[in-house]
Length: 179
Image (cartoon, rainbow, N blue to C red; front, side, top):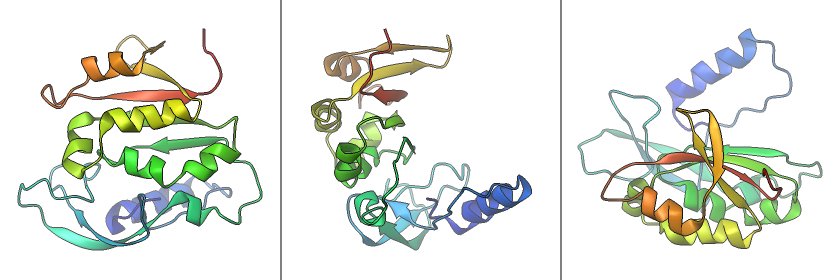
């Protein structure tokens, strides 16, 4: 899923050049609601487009949004892995994927966690993490500097990564124990 036309074209070309036959490309944003939203474009970093207004004067385009539960409602196969990097919209993506996460008990995920972005978007980082824990996931902080993962509690995440610090991390989520 990639909503930006330029990024989508690069993704499509990458898939074609590498001869991938098992990739389905969808030019939409993923969220907790289906419809149309503004995608606010970053001039400096095409990986930093957002479906909410940061109030920094970004130009925007209209994009279609989809809920993962709706997109995969008729999918009969297994879903093993989801990667979510949506610049603070991760909580909304999870809200729109609860059915998938319940049906696929062995699913694992890698997800960006950026409390400031979530707060500006309008979701609550603590509620987002609690929802994942309630779904049975253990949360492992990915320390890219040391190439290690460490299980943290929700409280530890909220202490380490805050709106005030404007910092974030990537989280590996699994229902299996890694220790």
